[in-house]
Length: 212
Image 1 (cartoon, helix red, strand yellow):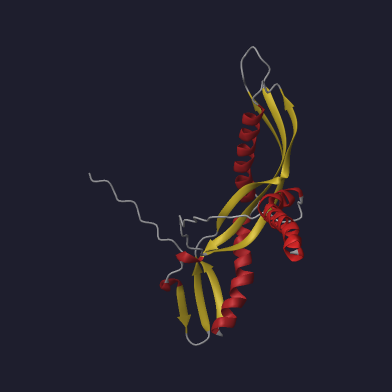
Image 2 (spheres, helix red, strand yellow):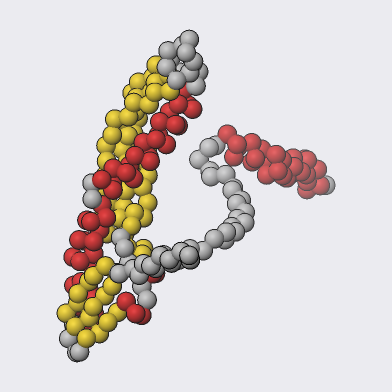
């Protein structure tokens, strides 16, 4: 009888402990995780990557010209208002290259056992661009709430000027010089021949005489 009396006293406490444990697991544990930021939250990422374009890479970059320019871009607004003006410090670059995809079998002439003549495609500017990390706006006047538009126009003008500045500075000539320095020893090592590089001669179609 005494044992039954003890069990009756213990059973409610056992049930209370079980219910408390379940409550902790299903109710209080999420609250604890929320209050404790040390635990990393679960992250689910879904990728849907689509290949949109494949490009052949065959341009050998041989020289890079870096430029720094101070551009004052002025734009007429009205005959009754002062002109808008922005001043920019612009960093830019232009890269000269040779497109090796244009090489043909006829451009390679093996002479005897010791000489190779290579007719190279004409050097070109691969790309030119503004380096915005090296550029900034340092002055604006009378922009009439068109700051962004004027700055954008100024940068476009500066970018076009980078290409012209590179041409004026001899980037195409330097590309040819660097092709001689880089390609010649590489080809001589590969072929075991003396290599002579020369510009490809383009055939010009003679004009057709007018019929009388």
